Length: 353
Image: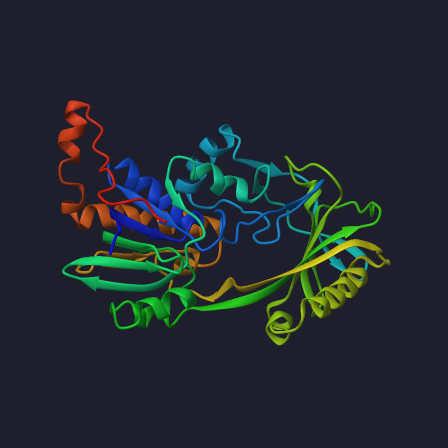
């Protein structure tokens, strides 16, 4: 069986996985990143069309942790993020009330722009869904739906806990902890109105049992084109309508949007998207999980909570601990640094198909 061989395989190209992969790569390891999607970002997603774009997943992020604040300065200088200064309000059937003020940031030119920028120097393999993970002779075999195979000394799982659990069942004691995590679904609606709505806010927290958030995507920095709106359904509504047809969801959320802003809206486009694992409702309350013996790390926003900042801190911490706990993974790196030699390990197998 022909396979790519690497030091670390990172499964998941969201923010947590990319931060982890960059740190491991910068430490001198050969790292391969895999994601089932065609690109990067996970729930920090942007859907683009002709003269329009929609951030239909994560809408923005805020900053609390000093380490994240320091990193944000660098990203802003690189043009990967920018403050979103449009007003964000509270909304009930067309009645607008102020919402607490805070600095909100977004990726540019879309929410996916941050992760796309972070992935530029990484060995990224999109369109690879992991279907089997097995440990043999102290190493990990990863088997993907495209028929590709990877042999790695260590693995980092950076995908939602409900997706990681079946892959790790009976392969690590950490699986029991993954079973404690709960994540809520969310139906998102991408809405393009026939004409500009002229609303005096960029985003709104909505008091409605059907939807809890709307945002004018074109009010965010770096966006161009037509006025585009994103509607997020509540977890309860999304769960109830989880298996509803896209047309049904689009119609119902369109009606909820009209109720929220207090006017009729003729759409040019209504496009729903279902996020099965959108936001953490029960987290582990830890930065990461690490099986030292198996050289298996697990990270994601859901370890700590549900914020973009949580994803960053989780990926950062699991990389730090993996490097510290398994010095055999970085043997020879220090010597390479002293002599100025690039010690990044080349792939020892053939390329992925």
